[in-house]
Amino acid sequence: MSRPRRRPDLNQIKIRRCNVLLKRIYDHSGEKPKLHHIKVLRAKDKQHFSTRFVEKSLADGLLSMGDGQLILRTRPKLTYRIVRAPGYYCCHCHRPADDGSAARLHIEAEHKDEASPDPCNPAGYRRDNFYSCERIS
Image (tube, rainbow, N blue to C red; front, side):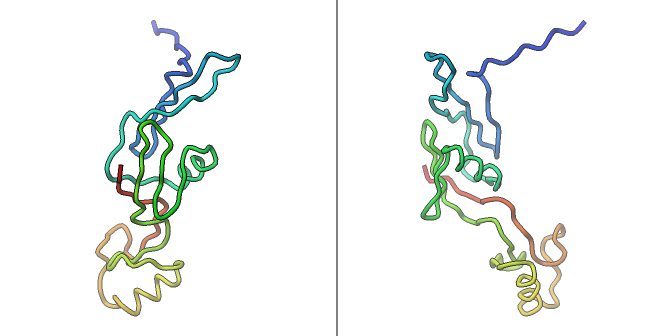
C-alpha cells in the first residue's frame, strides 16, 4: 500500500541547478505568498552555468552580469568570475573562435596533422553552451 503524495509547501521548494542549491524564501504575510529572498544552501568554487539558467535568472532579476562577472542576488551574495563564455574553442590551445568555420580554419592552420586531444571532439574544436566560472565571494 503506497502513501499518498503530499503537496510541498511553497516555502520548502528547492531549486537545483548547476551544482548550486538555492532555496526560495517566501513572505506569507500578505494575501498571496511573495518571494522574499533566495538562500544559498550549497555553492561550489567552480561552476558551469547553463545559458538557460543565466537567461532565466537575468529575466527574473536573480542575477546580474557585467565586468566579466556573474552576481547572484542571494543571501549570502555570490560573485563568480567568468573564465569562459559560451562559444567555439580549440581543443588544442583553447583559443576562442567566432563560429564553426573559423574554428575549422584555425585547426587547419595551426594544428593540421595533430590528433584532437579530446576524444569527444575529434574535429579538434568544441562548442561550449555554458559559462565556466570561478567563485570570487
